[in-house]
Amino acid sequence: MDQKITGIIARAQEGKAPTYEEVMELLALDEASPEATAVRGAANDLVRAKTGNACAMWGQIGIDVYPCEADCQFCSFAKSTTCFTEHVTMSVEEVVKRAKEFTKGGDLYGLWLMCMNSYDEDYFLEVVKAVRAAIPPQTMLFSNIGDTDVEYFEKLKAAGLDGAYHVKRIGEGELTKIAPERREATIAAAHEAGLQVQDCCEPIGAETPNEAIATRLFEIKQRDDDYGVYNGSGVMKRNSVPGTRYEGLQNEITDMRLALIGAIQVFVMVEQSKMPWFAIHEPNSVSLLSGGNSICAETGFNPRDTAEDTAGNHGLDVPAVRQMFYQAGFRTLVRGDGTRIELTPEYMEAKLAE
Image (tube, rainbow, N blue to C red; front, side):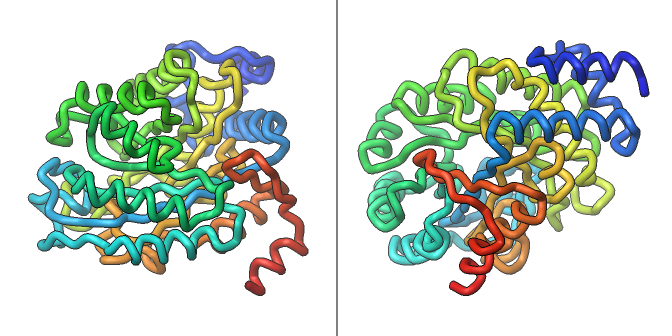
């Protein structure tokens, strides 16, 4: 074992975050090396000890699709490469139906409502009101929408929205047609409106420089320092979407690599006032043994999928997510209001019987 790496691990276990230079050393590790294995194991121990071996299930509904003007080079919706040629929007009733299906078990932590870069604000406001009225009060409701301002976020909050997922992605403004400053302004607007904020280090591909990953991890930490309403973060791999410039498995990172990056984020966040939920996408068992404790079921349109409905194709359903957590050794599910459910064999069997 490299003694410098063991020193970084030991300091993280004592609650001291690594420096940027140390993060760069961790990112340079061979994903299958003993050092990388030790990093993943230490992150797993830290998160489980801090949270009481707890996990959080999320759901996401992609409610519309069209050939998108943001033209992100990694996205199945990009107008220059998309297979989606028409503008399709779910009815409010259909969104509510899917929201009820996701939350019928009563153990979903939160639900994301995702729409395109440009969207009908009145329609989305109606969706938020309808979904909030239809789902259990212990399930948090978050948006995943295009850039907007404080006034609109305030309307969404009044309609029942709890928070916003919004990210300045790696390569923003270069691989996308969205200015990074616009993303930052929307994140600030969500905070100013009193919403909880979620961030993520994404999208990570095989060619993504370690410097870009490290910079994003520290930006996320700084946002938590600045806003103090941090709800959760995570790391997300970039899928090799057919038709895009990144088509082909050679452009994807492995689950082992994603798990290592997720573990490094745990180290970076170890000094924060509360240990947040660490989301992993795509969901995988290695990451759930490396500090990841939050994964997402998906239905509807998906920017990482070319199917009209990602459910049953690329996206997991809630029972599959619940099963992944159980098999990874988690024994408590936390809901959005903080209440906890013991993830026992009896509970699992009862859910399978529903």
